[in-house]
Amino acid sequence: DDQDKEDKEDDDNEDQRVLSPEDQANCLSSWLLLYLTPLLKLGATKILEPSDVGPVSQFDRATICHDAVQSLWIKEVARSKEANRKAQELHEAKLAKASGNPKKLAKLGKFTPTPPNLTMVLWNGFGYWRVWYAIALYIISALLQFLPVLILNDLVRYFETGAPPDFNALIFHPWGDVVGLFVFPFLVSLLQTRSQVILNHCAIFIRTAVSTLLFSKALTISASGRAQTSTG
Image (spheres, rainbow, N blue to C red):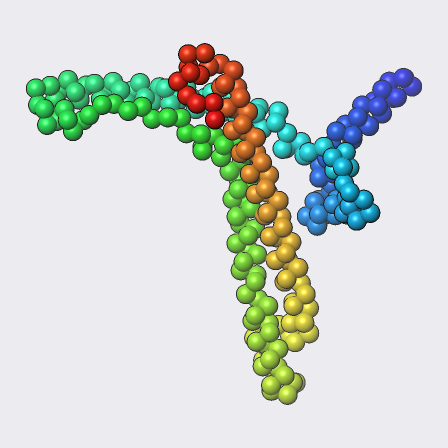
């Protein structure tokens, strides 16, 4: 039993070592980016080394990105092939009906297959709700940026009227306006930072997923196929 506990503790410690500071951060630390504080303190005293930064986030690792996209890409290729097959059959049927009519044949032209939709694969692989969530956070923060302007106008009116006891506030009570001048810019910064973190993960996911797909495809191309395209 003691040996099993020790093995379990070793496994837990190993999991902690491979987790990035972002993965280990709680909700508060994740939103306020408090997990970066030790790294910033260390960077103020020495030149940071790759070992000081630690591992990347699990969500940004190549294996995770590849696995999230590979299965969706295979399904998308199969769907595209089936759709192109049906479209080609329909096109050939139209050509058969238009035989003997050069104008219709020229109008129909040659069948061009539709390539698989990589954008939709990446969209679903990353999680479309994550992108909409980041966009929603940014829109909310943009709307909140108008409140400090209204609060300042409210305070100007308050001081111009000599601070009467029956002052009709536009937004809040004057003391509420003072608090709002601190709270709303803080919320704007918080929401925009969180939105930017999500979009940065999205950019890393797209780059990593596309790179791994290209690498997997390169392993299956024959020598004659490689000769038809440039290395770059």
